[in-house]
Image (cartoon, rainbow, N blue to C red; front, side, top):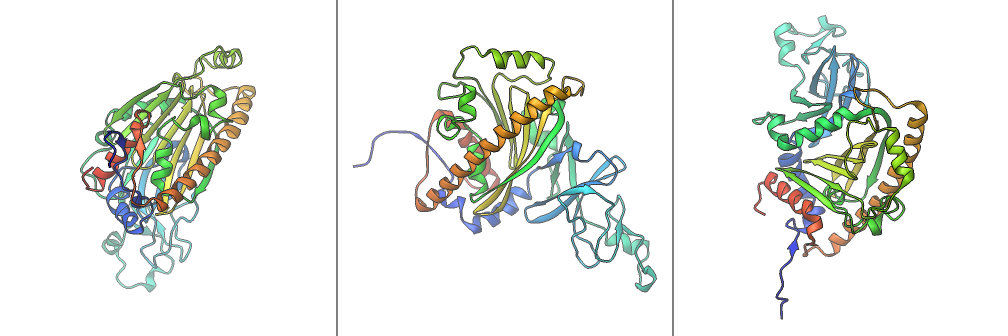
Length: 374
């Protein structure tokens, strides 16, 4: 006899979390067809600063050309070598195979032994320029869209734009860049960031010690494909040490009442505890069964870009690095376990509580982009 009760449940089938054919479809319909977060402008401050990444299997370089950001296919049009091979750096857009240079318009110039080529006049060079991609900036957040966009970044972000501007205003010194590989599908890693239900059991030495627990209240906002939440403390007893420290940096621009988290679909995840530090992370989908959580960790500024003094900065950096590394190690273990469980329970879908509503909203966004009915 079937149970006669109703409950919230996941709407994306378990096999979508490990099926390679589904992953290939995601490459086309989601990653290539969304405004995709690349980096902050702090990684592109100087002429010839660049950042590389893959979007939907396409190698992309975003480069600063004397203050103008451009996004190009990171493949030389001569013999198809990858032009910039590092994750980030500072060098001209020059292919390391035969030394072809590319200018701010993606057109090759300064070609070694150019006279040995037939018909490489100006018109021909423009025809073999690098393929360009749409690039737009919100605050200090740089986004690229592989497929020509019918929708601006502002339209895509909707109500989430305001929070990105707030985060942009708080960024101080960069503490570190860090990557953690996961033997888990990218959606599992993303969904793990969307709720606080697991804090007491998965994060006993980090979030739970700070006072977050099952009694923590959750304020949620849904903005189309995107969402954010603020988790308030479940333990509201006075904490003189924390309150004293917060008073030392009371001018910080962003002061959520607890832990703030935001996602911009499909790959951007942002987290900040009381606005003291903030991680700006990307979830890189390698294949159906592997992903990388990569993030830049920043300390706050004190308004108008004023940096923390060295003493406070040292305190913030030490605790933030230890906290974030520990948290991510705990998340890695649980996400990899969930991934294995989904393979074994391939025919099932998960049961969800009201505290996990952002997972439902993420899955709705996913199915919409995949052109499927929920």
